[in-house]
Image 1 (spheres, rainbow, N blue to C red):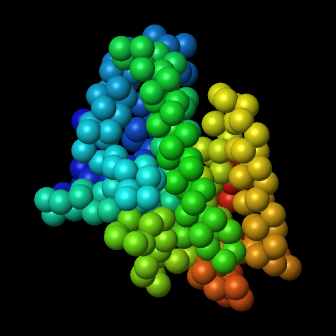
Image 2 (image 1 turned 45 degrees about the horizontal axis):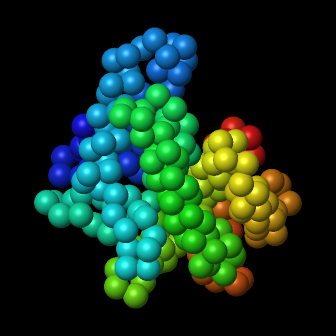
Image 3 (image 1 turned 45 degrees about the vertical axis):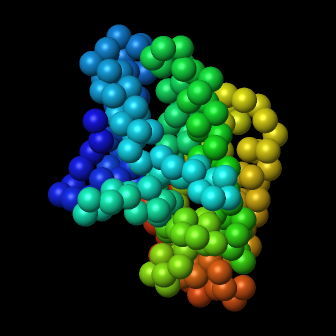
Length: 215
């Protein structure tokens, strides 16, 4: 089961919350909502089968199905899935908890690379895996950062489940970058190009910044 919108199938925009809420409905029911858990398990099996690929450079990413083919592009929004896989590992089918925890770690690494390969150490809205280009935005319209929480959320989940210090370090790197490049006199602003060493602010502090990114 993969959420579809016409000819577009994505774990990112328009679809991300659907998968997350299936898992959390099961958790909030004290693990008694077996229908929600079944729907979640069906969904992640389909995601892994149809959308998850490994790049030439060894980075695991979640692509998008468009017009009958897989587009080798991953959105910042889809980076929440690393944390979701880790959170849902316990209780997974066929005793695959270790597999899904590792898959979450691989997604976290890929999303960290999308941050690390920019001038600002902040991730673009989406990034490609096309030949020599990996985890990098290629279109100007995809190079912005609007204070999104998904990558940092995944770091947090991976830290809680593994206590690997790399996730605390990666989160701190992002916090420092946000403080350095996004803080303005009235709060925090998104930036228009994370590959520019002299970024231009978009003068918008998104509501989810306080509710999710900082949390």
